[in-house]
Length: 433
Image (cartoon, rainbow, N blue to C red):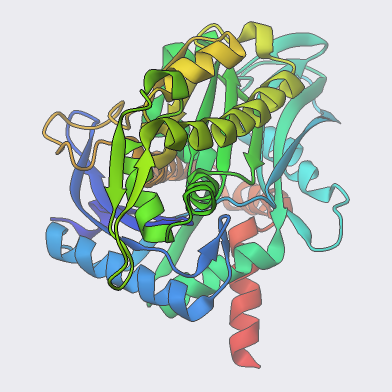
């Protein structure tokens, strides 16, 4: 097994930390070689709150993944999420000097890099800049402008912004666990890669990943990402409501939710009762499933209202032909699809991360719970292919004379360092001190 073939996704979530090891096979599908999962005890709402606990959990998940895959893990693609993530749309343009030359990758890079000059609030940085569509001499809707001719080149960009400190803490935890970060990838984009197909993205779809601490939303239309958002509610807040409403400990509340929980109270009868073991010699506590469902439904409705608000806020509510795709651990709650369809009036399905997986993947892994981890592997593999393709194109184009080649290198020097590169530079500088 070639070490370079292996892609590892590390999902640092609020309830679990999961490591997924995979590689692309000869048919272009992703093979899952192994996975590891452990409880996350140092992360709250997608943000690291305790470095040491998070490092310990990462190490356990990585060790499990190494044992199952037989591979030594060193490089990982890490997901970034949390309530600090936000997005905005921005328009950029350049006037080309030589209109007789074809539009090149260099022109797109110039346009792309200009977006990093936007003014940010203190403590915030641009995580990613995603081009949506290009405009050449007022001709709109162009997706692949390379090779075309034109004087003015414009583009609409989807810009993702996050708190620098939150990203640095994630990076620090991964480094302390003895790993190297290949890339920081926005988790809703990763989940969308694993659960959605191209037809859904073309038709218009809202991908909703209900995690433990947060709910991530990514809206696609015409094959382009149009809106991303993070809601600071997830499955954990439902567990807390059950704990308070039924006056039981959190462990029992989580078990109740997973085994007997329903987001529609009307689907349960009053006479359905479950007994919870009493604490230290106390008698068992009896809870009706109707009461349990009422507690769950109240909070679930609030989460769906937030989701629907983001969909309306994006301006694409009427254009989402494929409706809503629910994924993540929280999506496994019984009757959630029916409640979502009732409240939003949109077609809804549960998203399983098997869109790009080989047929021999185990049922244990191909569940909504691992959508983000598998998506990180898929997105990581795709980014490696893109970089290799760029490198090949660059090498093929370097048949010019030395003077021309030197000039091209100098022109390419404008591209700003990536968000990850800036964090790495900060971390290395901090270690030198």
